[in-house]
Length: 146
Image (tube, rainbow, N blue to C red; front, side, top):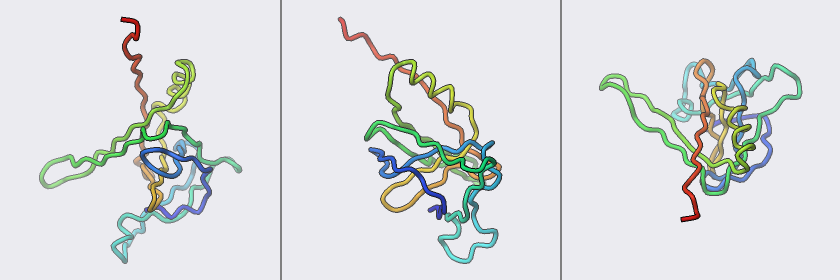
């Protein structure tokens, strides 16, 4: 759960309800973080604070995704004595080939923080020093003229 004191523009997502936004790592000097000394169980997964942007007036960049195409997974990985989670997700960003290519070029290989929301809470993907990376792929499909 993320207690984020900033405001996200409202975007409705299909599979993951709520709002989604991306913040490039280079655009912030401070990121919400977990408490150094957790006092309650929720403190282990609840980041506190707000993003501090380098430029005054900057805000998270909303990402549009087609309804019901958003997926998010946290799969276990690692050795017996050192397990962690590999976080993956996907969504479909509609538009022409030019629109999709331009979107991919803007966001691919850009370290940053992804904010997603469902019915219960906001979730911050990435943390200071360990940003997330969004990548894009293309599938041109098959010919409909057979």
